[in-house]
Length: 230
Length: 222
Image 1 (cartoon, rainbow over the protein chains, first blue to last red):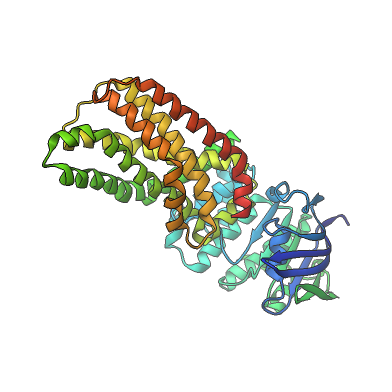
Image 2 (cartoon, rainbow over the protein chains, first blue to last red; image 1 turned 90 degrees about the vertical axis):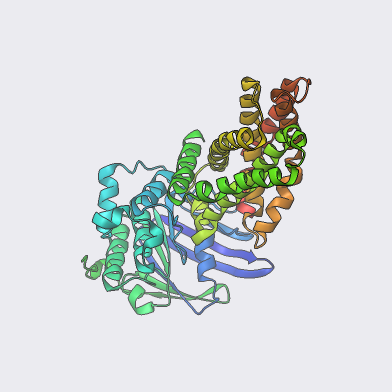
């Protein structure tokens, strides 16, 4: 299985503090890996380092074949990050935000493709042309997921992805993650909702103090029913 | 690069079209500055006419600060700047797009302020070619310099107060050269106005080139 993420003794500093203090991690294409651990363990920094938003100061860090210690920008178009923030523009409509995200990533965002992405997240119809500032937190989260899905990234980085979503939204997100992995995308999920996220992960790793301390194999996602799309 | 620039400029102008911050806040602010100058100097109408070019460009300069602050404020909300970094857009394209959107808003504002100095200061606009050329080249320089310093301050908690301290000294040559050129165009000076336009051109080229080269590293580190 080709590797989407390969970290060896990777160190990332936030100021002088080593938020990643020698991380070893492999994530294969088509694999869903859950990263669990207490607050401050370094989960978010790990995802941001994978996305090239945080520099890897020492060690090895390769994402989708690109050496992040040499060039953090080259690989970004192939990565989708759903973080604590949604990266949305308040004064643009739902459709405008998704269209901009897709075009910025080099996609075309033609009418039917955009409509399909919005429909999958139940953002079509009236919501399509609503300014994002008027949406609830959960709806904003759906727009961010729609932008992520529409970009078709090869590596999904999800930081507490279920936060703020209602039951339907959670099921929908799980189904999208399972489908993306089945299509060959790699997925790294950082979450405190271990039971929920663990249900869609192939395996889990535990972080503490900026290091990965334990890895546990989980049941293959293919063996489980994908979450229903409501 | 130019595709990315068009994408970013289109996004920023669409945000402005929806939020109308420039129309409802920046433009009234700029007109208010012109009116306050008129109140302050009204007793001696001759001074007002003589100083019209300088007062006009001071108003443009202050307004450009607001436009640049607004341009980066939309990226600060909900970590949109991280989204922009993650998008993989060419940083040079992002710079040109953001500077282009600021320049477009400033040019519209300058037309409004041009009407303002005619109405409030009783100024006569003579050399149309010199006025327009000066406005265009000075605006490119202001937008480029403002965008460079805008990204420099973007990641700082004190960005709103720091930006004027960074921008105003840097764009002092624009204020000087644009004022001199407009004084000629308004019939207040017999100097060669086009020499000042050339100086503005050099300033604009330097800041556009610097921004194209430096915006990427500045965006990563800010």
